[in-house]
Amino acid sequence: MRKKDSDKRRHILITAMKLFSSKNYNRTSMQEIADICGISKGSLYIYFKSKEDLLLTILQYYFQHIEDQITLIEEDACLSSTEKFTREIEIKLGHYIENQEFYRLQGQELSGLSDKSIYRYLHQQNIAQIKWLEQSLIKIYGDQIKPYAADGAFLLMGMIKQYMELIVAKKLPLNIETVVQFLMVQMDFIMKGQLNHHVEPLINEKLWSVYLEEAGEEKVHPLELIKEIKNQLKTLSISESQKKEAVQSLTIMEQELMSMKPRTAILKGMLRNLEPIHLLKEMRVKLADSLQMAESESKI
Image (cartoon, rainbow, N blue to C red; front, top):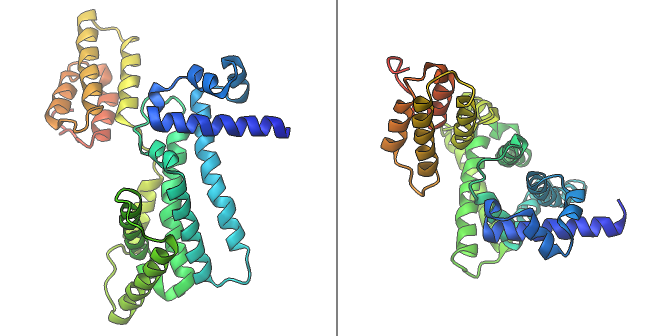
């Protein structure tokens, strides 16, 4: 790609990311992105085939930027495992502070996306993060720490989130390097303390395997399933009144799921309304599972 095209593509990515973050992804149109970038909508589609393609590329662009920096640290033979880990955490936290718009974008409810690779990509990034922490602790403390590495990873991630909230949300003047050094000292106490006192790990090898196995499963958002059920209804040989009532129930569920605190009673009630349509049984069970509302066998 020519430098001019590369620069233009990068400009589009950053502009779109800022718009998605400030306005919300679902409320931002490709036309608006094109207008602000000073190009035609047709030209925008030359660079990105769809808005979802643009979103996925934004995610890949920013995560790759972090990985490129991490790779440079990993390849530095002059640094110890502890020094590498410390610097890598500093890079990740610095990126979090400098790119708040990007992380706000990730915090949005990205529902209704037809490109499932976006959900999978974000899910993989979250799992990769906790596994990276676990493996880094093993590199630093050796194989003896393996039974406690998963607990250590969760503890460190929790501490990082709390201190980042103090820096970003509460605006406390805490220096990143100072925070990371403090956290490394605390982790040293924790990891060595578990070894010295023979503490029974909470996340043992079996639970860690279960966590990774479940984390690796592709989760389908309830709103996606509702969309699929609506499409399936169009093809079913049932009365129009049944279809209409089912669509109304699904629409109420959609509205409820989009609220800040979805009401369980409403969701369960709308699920029960779908029970008379036996041809929807399989999808209804999937939806109940997605909502973590396992129905009893008698109702299924």
